[in-house]
Length: 248
Length: 306
Image (cartoon, rainbow over all chains, first blue to last red; front, top):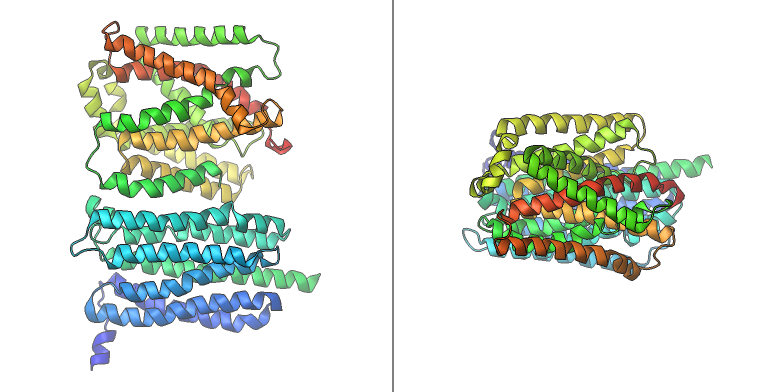
């Protein structure tokens, strides 16, 4: 009986709806990436495994977040950040794996991971320790600090080491793939701050009156776009590159 | 993405929460923040007009400067005779100039399609700027009587129609150039994203801060980079330091000139407001600069590595 209550999704609750569809989509994407691993060249199998892990970790978290939200009606902030702390660095691993053949060093991987952890820890403090009713200064300060991490990753993907290595790879598929992932960072990752700024005290909340119920809606949409999209780009690179290798 | 776009996006993301969480900032407090940025980062991009225009031309520097000053003088005269026409001319030329610099990295030739895109992109930008800051602009207009003459140009309905038409034409020309393969789909996506971000910036930021962010970073910084790379390629300058030396004399002269005019107002020699005086000065230095930059972009050839 309790399980039935928990699984009831109100018709007008877009957040609950996106939690459920997010969970299913992430799980479906994981199965797809795991099964497709065998169809690509050996050098791409690790990349596809990481793509599958990203969506699988997210699917498990979405399973819990969906129930948490339906049971309490509150934002599952802690679960959300545990998910991101695992999956966002894995996305940085994807950048490293793509450019490894062109000479990417482990240092690049650590720099990207550090920047992503900085971004997430600052975002977590901004969101989880926001005083009751919201404090704009708190939200703005931690949002600002978190953005610095984001800008570092954005720079690395568009102009920095990742972009230079992709350019040096002389592989059109890798170049195109890295550029597509850079677009994900630019546009897809930029959806998260919109959610962040909807929480009480956030400036979209105070200036435009966007409610805190939008936080999870934006996060769920962004997660679906970024995690599954990121994986599909990597899959596309792997398949195109493997096909090219076979015809050569 | 160009470095100017990256810098613009980064600045917007970092500044937006701070500025938007503030109570409405007064024009004077905005001016304290923005005027130094415009003077020392905005004006320099026009401070080497003589160097750029005289490349591959047998005209003496003194002659060029004489003509430049004459055009400035004629423009000031035009402002005295017909402020509304002078203001309209200033906006039209600025629109074209902003558009031209925005798309400079894509085209090696400037056909009519490109020129129309520059013009409509710039106009959409200016219409958007006025439309999204109409209240602040009207408040200024009420405060200073010289601005009253421009109020017919700032009617809300006219701004809305103008914005909708120029925005539609901008998107239309961008699509046309994409179909004709003059720009790639990625370029199209980036330009649409940047246009959206500029408009968001104008909508959310206070009047002067929003404009300064666009003008200093997306426009001036970008043009300065292009000028540097061009002169470096032409072996006119060999380092950033040398480039700054080249920019300094006319930047300082412009700043001193503006300070002199403000001094005249302060001591009641000139009986106009500071804002009105600034618009006349900016319009007067914009007029010859637009023509110089048009020639500069003709000289630029990205295919040759400049």
